[in-house]
Length: 85
Image (cartoon, rainbow, N blue to C red; front, side):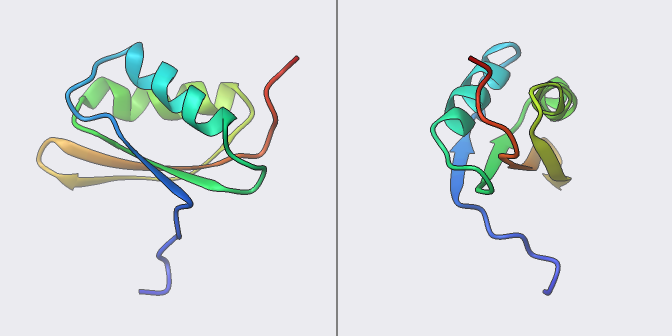
């Protein structure tokens, strides 16, 4: 497939609920370089909506949100901004 986006790092947060899903995602992306892509795997429906919203609020670029199973989502986020000082 040509639309496959290559993730630089994968964060599996299945079994975790908000707000921990966003906290873990935020900490993971802070350790990455600008332009790198974080793949987040979650099985918590609210996280599939809240994590992308929160990432965009932090200035990151949400590239894709897809449901990969009945209760599993894959979120791809590109680091577009360094942590605010």
